[in-house]
Length: 372
Image (cartoon, rainbow, N blue to C red; front, side, top):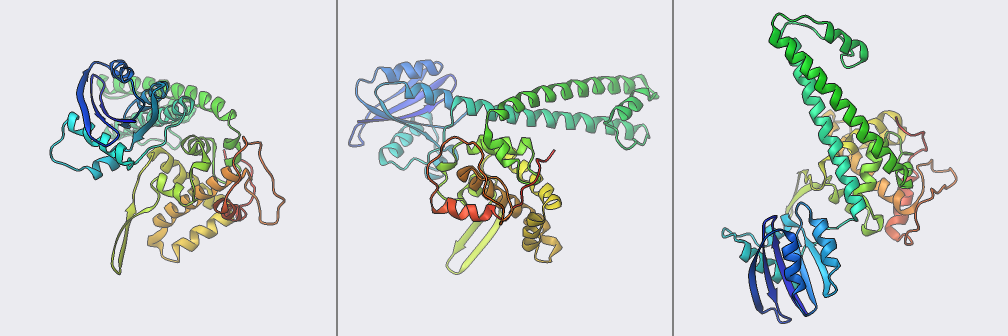
């Protein structure tokens, strides 16, 4: 079998082919979009394995490579970890393709999980909503800055109907300030309309996944948090241990251990930042809603007010572990002595020891009505 390393870009790509002994057979540059790269791979007459780094649109290329009848193995490498393995001051597309092919031949490629096209589209819509929210926050900040610059004090509930009506009635000293106010209000209304449209589509998508309703039984977990966790976990059984999900979402601390010294730093922040933000917000809501979550939070605080932020992140990681356990077992959030209930999730593999341990963790949470 041949081993093919690809360094792909939107307009040009490099390809390196190794034989079964790891000897380089050919290295070439392919001009043009990805369809030219796929056509070059179609010319290979022997069975081959192919590897490329994950980048924008990697799912499209992965699916089309899987359709090649001679592609025995298609691997998508983690770009950050592959750079750490082959850190070099000399970077060239041809050299990168050779290194990728060698990693593939040695079977040491740090792989990434490639979800289906439907799940990738779902994730993209979740991220699109987050960007819309950021734009709306920026618009609101500009309106508040406009009021402060003119010496006006905004009333409470500025973004309610009454507050926006008050803002429209304000008469500014200069024409430019009035124009800014009108255009920012128009932009704010359009952004709100687009966010509602996106959330409507997200609600329709979430209704097709029973796991979203399952996670919403946790106090403080609303529809946006539940759908983000379900979309990014996708297949719960791909996590062998429950603690692995904390590393996947970057909620574990950096570690620098040597001999007897073991230093833990800030969290790694790997994975999607949007999910981390939602999990922290859900943890904060759960602390106020659920005695069990608040008890775990206070335990992590340990009576030290300076540890409240650390404890909040730790509680978010704990809730994430519970979510994975619930997705594996199909059990809703409940009291310890309550009867076990199951939600109609798709059939999963039998949970292993890690999932059984997770089931004990879920017993600590009480069943509550879904958060708003």
